[in-house]
Length: 271
Figure 1: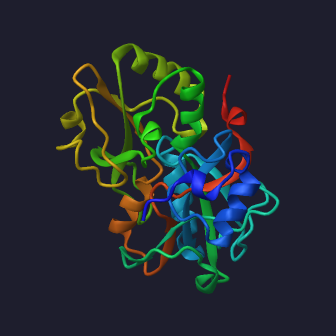
Figure 2: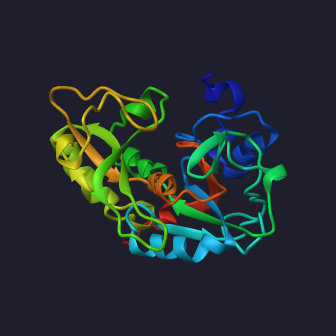
Figure 3: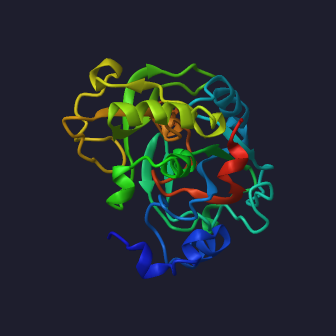
């Protein structure tokens, strides 16, 4: 069921990370987080058994465009104090994905009953953060206008393997006119910790995408005749790696349903 932001949050609540997390924790919000707490850094989430944590850390280090690390928890600790005093990874995402042997078996809204003492949480930068900078620069984002999740696609761009983790890069796509695309490159280059500049502009077939109308994750949006598709590395990339690594058990965010931190997007700017 599609939720309306206005039906759950007051205009003031929707701006503030703590208020948004409180509504998510209460179960009132279970949709994507695009447009919520827009001044604040949002994060992709991967939760793995400690036995796989070192491999995954190296995977992130070797693939910083799709997997920019924001935080790593202590084993067994659901709290992430570097992202916010009250952040609890068990309750603060609108929807999770539970994986067994490389397959999604459930999408709960709370994982407290699944928590284990050996689990390590990784939080990765998210393009929703640089979207705020794009909007401030006067650029239009169609999925935001339409209240949709951003379109995401698996590509033929291979990530650099680490241990059991490997696979294709996932990208997010935003259609733009040529002048806007050039400006978007300039703006997002300032945010390397949330994916940075695009990895591809133009012909989707060159990176293995057959049909823009059929994204692998998220919602399709129209690309008009005077626009080009602009592709950024995406933090859903680890989920593609998980389908190949097939760990016995792990948890991720559901695509678009991010962890909202107390960090400000402006803190991510490199200059």
